[in-house]
Length: 216
Image (tube, rainbow, N blue to C red; front, side, top):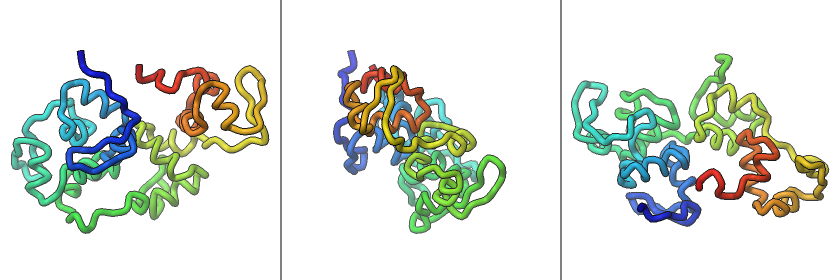
């Protein structure tokens, strides 16, 4: 039986970089926490789990670059272009670049994710992800969390972010003066509750699902 791991504890990637938890590490590579955990449980090494393209079938096999040249692995392909597999994975999964651009753009020209020119679901162009999210009154942190969770652009931008009310009322009608009080009444942290609501959970589901209920 595979040993249970605590995915909320500090961790390191295959390069030795430290992260507060597996969610943070997964997001650094353009993945969701669930995708990373599924890959690890499928028997992938940490490097394979973090760097395989999101659209792949989960197998580490030879891959071909935009010139038709075959490489024995995704990591080897990235290395052949003087890049880390993490950088190429991020460019493909997070920025949505095509393979040629991901491989041929020098590392020193890696953009700040917030400053990537982009378009919304209506075709309107914005100078950055920050500008686009602000135009829809969605905090950039919420935008990135939804994007990492696999939401499409329209859903990310058109689902309102949670705004702080004067009082907090649960699904039973009980009132609480602070979000922390509401969350504590259900054995949750205020951060967990906020993230769930921003991710589109119904209030009752957000309150009554145990902190690790969706992860067994």
